[in-house]
Image 1 (tube, rainbow, N blue to C red):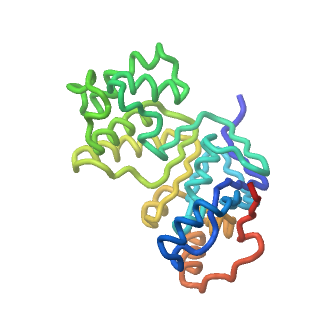
Image 2: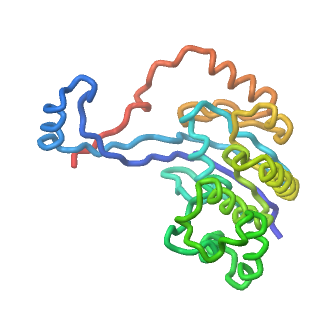
Length: 266
């Protein structure tokens, strides 16, 4: 059996978007309207991650650190398999559990019980196994009395509880997290914290993006610092946090040619 491992080599990710051009702040509403009608949109490419390389071996606990927009969540999505890199290679050995968007994959018109099947099946769990998990998921999310209701009738907090209960219903080799779960009342948060701790302890690799330095020091042994989609530091968590603080207090660097979006006329 192969060891659980994450290896990233030369990872870059570009995503397309359309830009109408011009500075909206400097335009009147009429010129903005006319420009939208007459000016052809430009297809541009934004670089979200650029030439990122690292490896996490079995037993690793890595923190992803950086300012908002640095690329932490994007990197987690690549590691989860949701995004494919534009360049480079991502090799993940082991089953993955991603706590990124707890509402992803839900259907508002389906019942709560049906959504458990939909979400769990999308996670790769066979329907026969899901059938035996429905009761425990409803119990943990405290939605036993709502199983036959449509998802659209739930509050945002109830949907978060359901998504968390499904996403953490099984133990996987690799745990990918974007911040620590903190939604719901005090009793549910404490219950969720206990399950999160249990899943983290049972995981062979943990990758956690957070701005909570105390928690990162307690959970992670190493840290990877991102800035504008580039890897700035990869090493011990104490030094990673120190590097991030230096970046926050340093003046913003002048943009380079690689920072500018590339445009293609459509």
